[in-house]
Image (cartoon, rainbow, N blue to C red; front, side, top):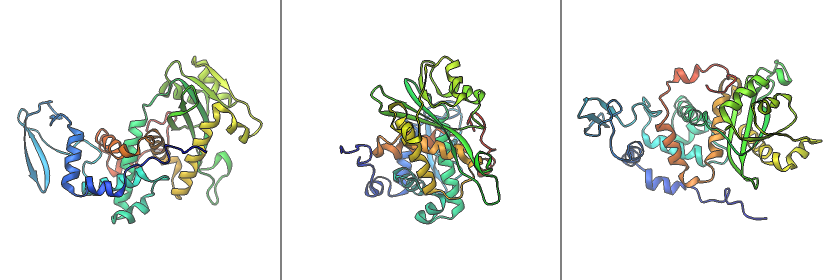
Length: 323
């Protein structure tokens, strides 16, 4: 059997992390270069001239034009965090290099921080990933499947009516020779034609060709003008063996096993959008593990700050998966 180059790529070792980001100054320098690669730019007026100084050990910039004072993390997902940047970088490495991810409780033990701090850090990173992935569109050949997260709780309903069962859609863009490129995982209120039409408008380019099972709601994609092939199989095993559904079923199985193996008390109906976006983001960046930490930092820089109250106040997943 040929070696899987994605699985056996070198990645970023712990020794590499310690060498590059082993102290706060190194993390500050990396974040500064990534946020302002061509030099400081004032977030208010866009000017580049500024004086720099430190306040309470943190670097600050004061714009020479409008006099605005701004910090390295102001306006980013790093803002208002009491954790040192070195802890953030270590956490990002743990969360992006592991095969099946890391739960907040384990993250707190590995980093030596309290559970609440680990939870906030992890959910901020996942929210940044969700913001980044929410506008992704797929084109070319797209394999799509419907699925559910979670299951019944003790004393609760069973089956599709379970209080902790969340519907979601998984879509995978592939090349002509059936190699996976990008993925989208989106929670839905249900598998209706209205929900599928809204999802397609958001996540499919106009000429995308879609391959689905026989679920009637998928006809909404055909009605929207997408070339639509319905794949019929006698069994789930048969569906997995079909060329134009093999990858979406493989990835779906991997995602479910990863979530089940890592998280054991998720409120799927409240936070599914984040856990699914995290899985999609990891899938879409898995081809270059050596650079994935910098991609995650870039994602955090370009995401707006979310307070803990905002992180916890997200309502149940909406039909378009936009929250």
